[in-house]
Image 1: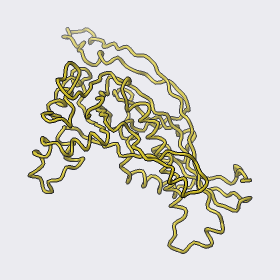
Image 2: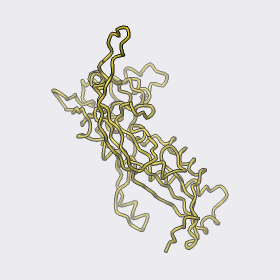
Image 3: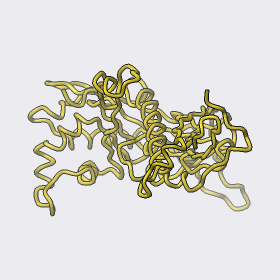
Image 4: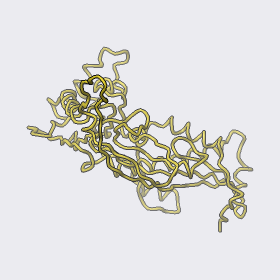
Length: 334
């Protein structure tokens, strides 16, 4: 039976935490923190203000007569709250395995990467299940195979479709509603496949250096700062002790809705007075030795099983802040 390490055996390993940060930055498959920026908070739960968008879209400025006060600007606001949850996972490296490993084996950093992978996978699973779907955002469109009507578009894998025209019109409506420019866009894998083979996009990039559709070129095509394909995938299936049987019984799928599109506005850095689709509230009061993503790695000793434990922990909650700052397209492809 594994022994739980005592408090005196626990410390945050800053070197492994930095390995975890580097792995996060190198891995472009995960999307949650790109769309809901990280916002460090001291308390596990608290209240934050939500301001009325109309107060920012009108002017109360008036001519000022000599000896009089300037016009006062008033604004209305409501409150919302968050509550951060703690997530953790670990890998045990037993002393026999460590003693038998060759010098070029990097057991600790490999364990750190594995733990990080599991924590990031869960974060994307949570985000996609809660936010990459219909029924969440202030404006929604639906792709149809023919004769689109109000709040509909011709699916982008259908002949004669025009993704740029559709998106330009939707961006104009977004700008009118929010006063902000669309700067982020996330698409499912099936949508990406359709876009990467769409004649309108291929015609735009045929004179580029490589003539190959990339995410950067599609970002320029749509005029957004950040374009992400939801490449993150997951394995599902029964937990079977035999690894071979378990792999044979597993099935694999992309985490996100492969036919969905989400676009909107995400600030480059969190601000109390800046609208946003949402934030990831990272509880830094608990993960005091962690990184800006709210993730820390600990190197613990479990003496009863003669093992070193590499443990990762994250404390956060993904919180929708402004539904108006996001637009969803259901079934953008057929």
